[in-house]
Length: 313
Length: 284
Image (cartoon, rainbow over all chains, first blue to last red; front, side, top):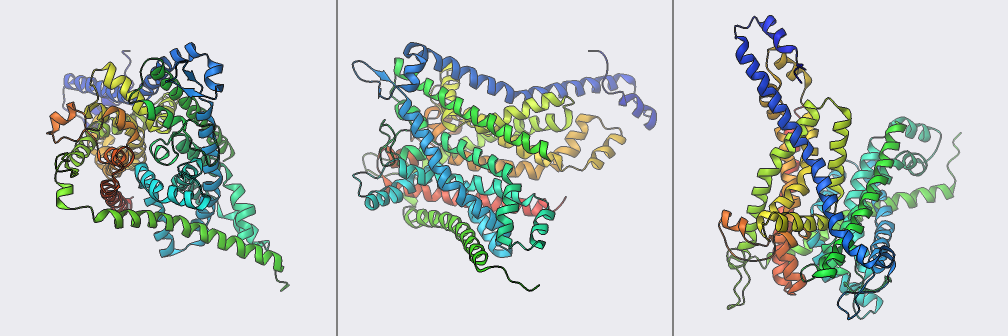
């Protein structure tokens, strides 16, 4: 503990020929030490928060899973917390979230990648500026506003186009979510595409490929790691979105179908939170724990992709 | 030598080029039409009485002054906490940490935090701040939840700008005999101010738009309070009020009015952060 990691003060004293006595020097050493410790503690806050959140979620989520049983909880297909014999099966929520994620990725990712390619290679000058400003705007719009637009534009449109009794369904949620992930996918893919070295691309052009063939066969494969990271981040955003989904997905605990009113994991938590109590409340925490597990899996996947990218460079 | 590419390849290329163009312009068109739709429907609602009064059940009018005030209180209080914490953590990572494993641990933790959905923050905030710390459903609990949510973003912005501080400046200060803390105070912090400002603005945007995490921590009451009083009581921010009006009460006129304010704020935030980047980004 006593060893001083900074031998510099004595040196500076020599060099500067400082007239300061050694006493205030020691005091300033103490201040340095104290400041370093303070910064270290601030730095550790993030780690502490992750631990706190994990511990709280696990502590709050496990009791209900123990009471209901892990298998019936995860694979039960009916959610009737208020019935005489309450049933707590969250398979509908899990599947809705997964289908919603898959749908939003299928719709949003290709559009996002093509838009990123256009921004990187097609659009020039003013056009590029205007387009990227608008897409940045898309990232800033709050999710409640997406929900509001979805509720008043997309839901009625889906109802009249597909002749449904109610347009609030998985399909509407997928449309809203795929718009919401566009800015994430576009900006991450754009970053990946723009950071590529030019040589390969120029080689491909010199060999006679058209610029579009170059984009498909050279640029996209080279940027695939960055694009994969973009997709995983987008997936995280979809899985975690609550408010917009709440407003457009109808919120009934059905098994998912494209035109069924569905409830995601997130909306299952938020829709009953305000009045739930007892085992039902505990079960809601368990749902949050399942959601957290999903997010952590995506995190691991993302890290894996990014690490692979670092290794390749 | 002059052999042109085959017709099939030509058509494929043209098809792909136009597909790209359609997607690019389509995304921009979506952004534009959402904003235009909200503004067209919402700006008409923004009368003086709507913005500067509180909702009255007797007159059946809706006013958003309480929500506006709550939003301002929330943003100010949360920024006052998140900026020192975020900048401090970034300084530890960039200037102090000599242990690569420790830095990796902290950065990894920040990454995990930034991926956690807001609804989970809302739940944990409710369990920890409202129940365990006894803050009840109050704006203070909402503020603390927002601090946790925005910490990783703040750290990242501060870190990026700390990296751009020229090493020569720091070395010069060390050579003149300044201690580490002195260097940080007088060289590093002023130099990273623009980056921190951008981070603050981004945090503002996220807090103004947040609703899921605040529903269970800050609640949704509409009463006009002073700053200290407001922190102790439940209060809706603009986004939460928008959600409640649209989803629970079906009052879409009020919802559009609030949405228009939110869109205007988002536009202002985008312009401001773009301006800061342009103004100060060219320095280095």
